Image 1 (cartoon, rainbow, N blue to C red):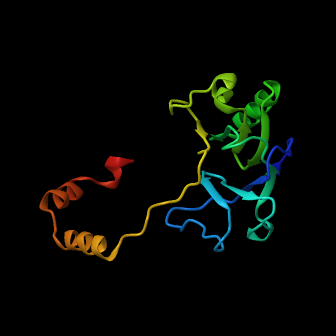
Image 2 (image 1 turned 135 degrees about the horizontal axis):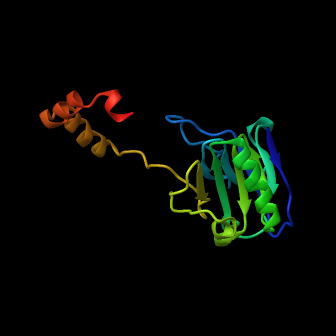
Length: 179
């Protein structure tokens, strides 16, 4: 279930929370001239920023909340492995005066700038157990640029040559070894 709360509006943009993109799924393409911005996909959701003047997209699958600062609003995505941990973080966020702007499954979106991890007692450097604390990028996520024909030809040439060292490494690593 997805929830979203509105906050005081300070500019003309709206955040959109949508289902996550999955590995191999292409980045969304917006109509030419659109000012929609993709801000990342996370385990349980994707974030977009759109001008209020543009129509909502994704046929209602996108739940919106108001932008209230500039750049990335100081947004953080908090992913939890357990629903009860997420609920405790939602309560702690509200107690600390941080806005829980949206949630989906076991992921919440919180605003409060750089202070969020400290105020919640989280480490944003990846050493948290059973949770991930991720800052939302202040600029659009664009994805890799497509290869030019010349670049593609160079890489295809490399693919044609089998590297014996790589084959030997692949032969020694089993699925049981890496799991």
